Image (cartoon, rainbow, N blue to C red):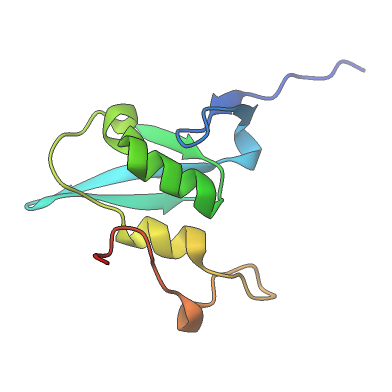
Length: 110
């Protein structure tokens, strides 16, 4: 039996390579004011995607390095809110984020 190699991608946060199945795909959705980052756990949304470990540390590192704009080839203002909620949210027993406990710390003024 021959094993097939799984595709590998690079995390935009920590820059480590990992199988694509372990990384969260992110796409930029454009609107009039800029772009919103949207998580794509099913890997089905159209457009260019960036990959990241679903870890708050990798997310913070990618935001600090401004890696999303370069990886997704977008310019202008990028809204990280929806992605921050997805990454920071603790999951319930169903595997979905618990929306009642979501709090984003990234990008807020101190």
